[in-house]
Image (cartoon, rainbow, N blue to C red):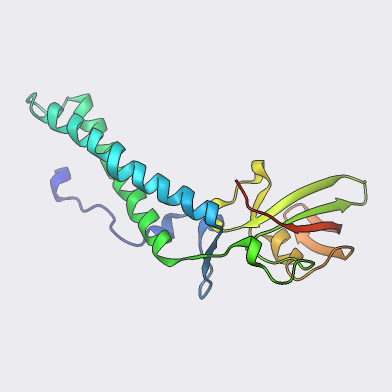
Length: 185
């Protein structure tokens, strides 16, 4: 069957997402101001620069004739689909985003969304995590999603509290050493 008659999935991109990026039913899409700005910048880059550049390449490749063996055309069309999919995703996420400024938290001694928390474990190791939105989580930068097991265990706790929670590696016990609210880069 020709590809012209095969319908691409235009269903909900949320189903194709990894579980870590899915917003729980009934939950809001909380995001920090810095995370919101990063998503907007990515969307603008795709819409104003990347997509028009690829459209020009595809138009040029299409004008060369036979498209069935034209690598620029085939790759360009595939890249356009990827860009369009990402644009739809970012647009939906930004539409439902609820920006929460960590500096406006009223209860600064308690852990809520946007907090930067330093924890210690029984071995004396300290780690610092910032609780951020699903779309801006990056464990390598110490940013964990507010729906992660660790963040859920930390929410509403205070400095000095001991927390016991179920992590993917098993039950962990930690102590909250410091809670602060700051603008994240």
